[in-house]
Length: 614
Ligand code: AGP
Image (cartoon, rainbow, N blue to C red):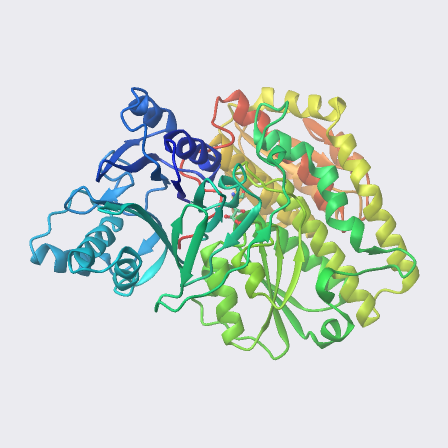
């Protein structure tokens, strides 16, 4: 999704800070970028389609230097192709105002026609430009900037994070507003700063104010005035954001994704260590989440998520049903919200989300709440909307995940789901203390087991597989039971960073159609853990081999490895935790294949890190 930054300083030039802020937000995915600055009574801007480097080239002669206020934007195109003209910022009819926007103005076309009917001429195909003209019109009628922004946004239907830069007799002014996509601000004695992602503010402060839906904020150096959309003053206390700047550096790794894969043992520890109650064979969560009373009140769990987080949700279903005996449904957030769902009383809607700002997941959980469900969230961003709106919260402590392809956040989500499933089982009596202690011990062993998968012996083997098959026609990932979602996740990882065709399927389903795809160039990755389903997966492997297909087995089942063309051995663990160990080699395989294919691993084409629009 789009990245927004803005700065208003006491003195000095803002161009360098704006570009640095946009570079931190690059990981969110974009296809054009631009900045606008206010100086000498006018707003001046530069914007370019393509990578940030093209914008930096356009600014290299320093012609925008010296301005003490400015806004910047990385655009992920929704309305209008990624061209220089459609890049943000957008201005009105004169050069006194510029805006940047993340989100969608749903009624933009009717407003555009209204404005064109009044003689306004548009210079882009974007919905965003409508707001620039509305604010400009209100300014011409005498409104101050905050009032003009509030009045203009009152005409807008949709959701947005916007920043508006204006200049006039009193010098530069900077206002921002939020309805949906996140927006955060901070202040220092030198200035005031805004960004769509807290990572863009860390160079200035860790005391962050997270705007709420409806907030309109006026930023001046050292001070911020926030009102509701109706203009009533409102206080928003700063929150201390502890992540260090190390979180946004690649360290010694070539890509954030590889660094984050290697962070996973530490992430498992951070997400569990303070919650383990070994003596009781139980877990406890901050804020009393999933306490005994709540755990015993649940009749059904409705898991709602998107993408990789949904795959974690599928795994969570096996865990919660298998360990706690509670019925669980899982649905795509984008489907749940429009299928007129029916929920039984005492349902808890469990959102799983790394960012906590995914529009479809937020909307689906709000619908579930309207239908009477209580809500819970497994989320990686404590300051997110998803967390703020949930009744029960279990945070993952994966740290900021910069790689667009989710890895450590996924593992943290699955680990969190495991701890919740055990907690629910202990509260409802399906797990006794002794078994709880065993389940905890198996979790505590996981960190070292993941570490072994990141050692040369395994990573070297994965690279051999990647070297042999990185030019294949396509991949089919197969898994059974709790490892069926691992097949989905392995396919998604490969798709999103290597752009190869890959699909995940329940192994038992292959003979109902997909087996027609089997031919020498189609590589089948069979996820197979030792256990009651192993011989079923072996049979599927034989079916593929009998048709000339190539099989790579991943897991702890030696029998599967013995009949496959290549294999990646995974340590044995419990059924419940096997998805985590089986996923790590698939993350590495996707990474190695994408690397061999020369793809942009951390910023894959067309993708955004947090999909804050529908
Ligand atoms: C995962 O690799 C993708 N980047 C994407 O599927 C992501 O998991 C999905 O958009 C959900 O995001 P969230 O976890 O922030 O809600």
